[in-house]
Image (cartoon, rainbow, N blue to C red; front, side, top):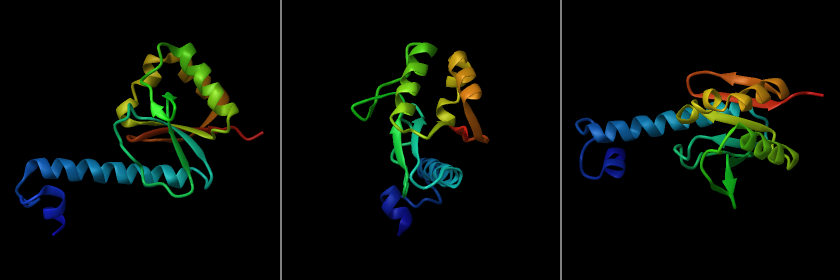
Length: 139
């Protein structure tokens, strides 16, 4: 019944498109659980994912797209300085973490000054094939 719900009338065992859809959903769910495990309840997390992961099932955390306008993903910043300014604005507003998901892993190479800023001012709390997650440094 699950395959019928997710993949219409085509069984998951024979339809390659369904396998891809299920694999993507499973990867996103695993990534969401991982992010929850490294962030505290009440965390406000900036999600850098190029708007590719969709809605993440979080309990007790607030996810905000980076960059955003009016709560909606606004695309990548024009340069590192714009990214840093937006990040500083969000940190002052109470954001506790910034998480770069695998679809946006290129950001830290492209926006080198942003990467330097993050490594100097924040703590890396997770690095793996799905995430690079930074948190506020303890004072």
